[in-house]
View (tube, rainbow, N blue to C red):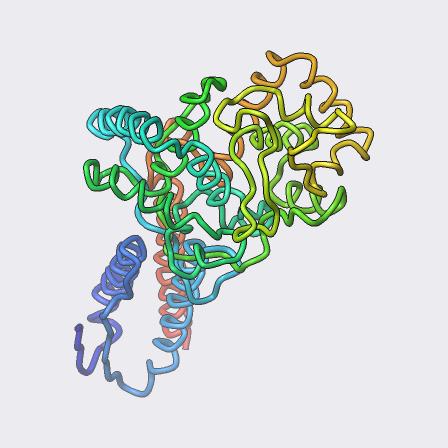
Length: 368
């Protein structure tokens, strides 16, 4: 709390500038901790300078408001950015490697590869490229989100991951869930997927309805995947993930596996999809939609006859999905650089504005 009584402009103007910038700097730092500053400035001035001080404070807090806006989550007026950026140092990378080994053992012992892949997919598949919200940020662990109808049955996968998290607490949930999806594919014979750690966790869950609805068709698939910033090829390649697992009536209203061996990752999903009759195997409306659209179908036919092409494209599409809205630390100078530069620029403008106004005021007073 700063309290200044009876400020004399000529004597205290430099002190005022220092206080302004100090307040701004405190607010800037508090933004990163997702807290609000508890500082205030109480002052009394002689009437000749009251209006001028009002202008100074108006300019100052306008630029503070700009700084606040820079650091807020898009389209949210009450929520600040997610947790601090993750420091991916040598120790963190070692924990990731250990977690990968633990996940391999867990998935192999529990036969839960399909469940883990679904968890990773559903956490990432909420991304909205326009608003920069949702995505692979670990929010699916929130009660609000895993209780969504589309996430029925995923509580068990979250509990499995919690066992690994307990051993490696430094790893974010966001990284852990996506690593689980990568390992699930690899353990079942699928392609090796490049995994880059550093995702931040979020406590903010998107509204229900962002994931694909299995009862819908071509236009729905494009709406959902295009919203994420993905392509037609990504749609078909990622649909190939249904080679693992089966549908459960209590979760989706559908029942049955897509392939003869639901614990083996291969191109059999596409092979079966092209067959007119696959007795005992499931074909969802969204699966059939891949055959109806010419652009989709050409990828289905390619992947059915060329497993290497499917593995190559799937690995690329899975990586894209797992990194939606995520900028690896190697692609930026430092975790805070962007924000620090923006805030620093605002600070310079604030100080410059105060100095210029002060100078103009003095010139005006001397001319009178």
